[in-house]
Image (cartoon, rainbow, N blue to C red; front, side, top):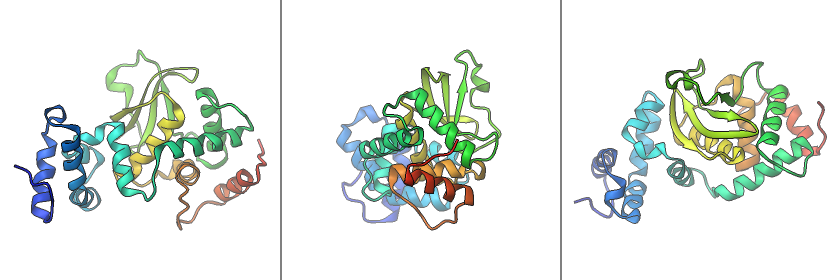
Length: 237
């Protein structure tokens, strides 16, 4: 029987291994959430200092393969994290980028493309659109191993959205691209992955606008210039 309070590394590690094969539906949601919460320290230790890939993390922690659990984990990692507030902030940020009062998936794609044109390396993007008929073995094939969104369909008609990396799907997210972009950002925090150099600028933007986090990592001149324009409300095309 698993104890209700975890007070030693051995118990945390044992519970972490139990969770790997645990059937979520076989216990109450409260019990399951308690087990996940109590193994947090050991899980972070494994993620930050023992795991050699995000795939290895997902293998030991399969519950991180669901967007709702990624959001719960982010709340344990990020101070004052609130998903709803992040969505509101990023929606307003996208409107500011486009100088538009409305925000929908097509507008989000336009905003992302505009930001990437300004601050990302040519040819790199956090959004990849795939035809729904794409063969499964080619759906997540990618030169970049870090996370990005893979969207089935077109900007005006999205069927499914996945957070993908290491040439595999880590979890399916919402078809609302503002929410999906936040889930994508959270995956970097939860799986402790560094931003790919080619896409770092857009992730710094998402991080600063949605989470309100502006860390001490030196940013490119292009990024600083763009953010100065963004904060002043003046954008050049």
